[in-house]
Figure 1 (cartoon, one colour):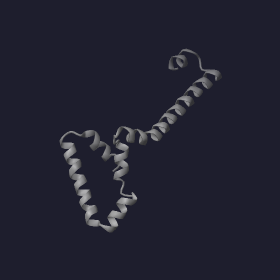
Figure 2: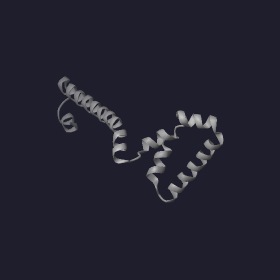
Figure 3: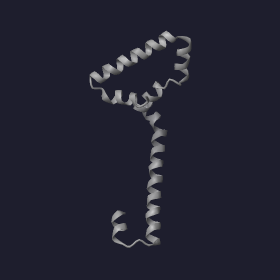
Figure 4: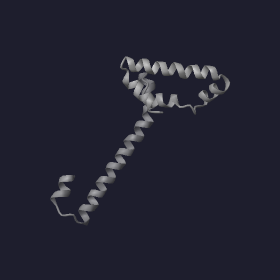
Length: 107
């Protein structure tokens, strides 16, 4: 599309064509992103894979279960955070960078 744009003078028809192509590309990108977000939980369950997105969701302190744990058992909640920090350090030490990086994304 770039070659067509630079090789010919820009007129109204060419501008409409480029705009239409750009809008189609943007729509396609949004569609693929939406489909991916919709299918990802299914893929995780079928293949027993945990993705970075799931790790970020599980780490969110606003989750109902974590809030309830913090209110009803603050010592256990604090211990869980400490264990998670140790596990994250251990994962980084053995170069489990993919999991460690994904869990840091939610901070």
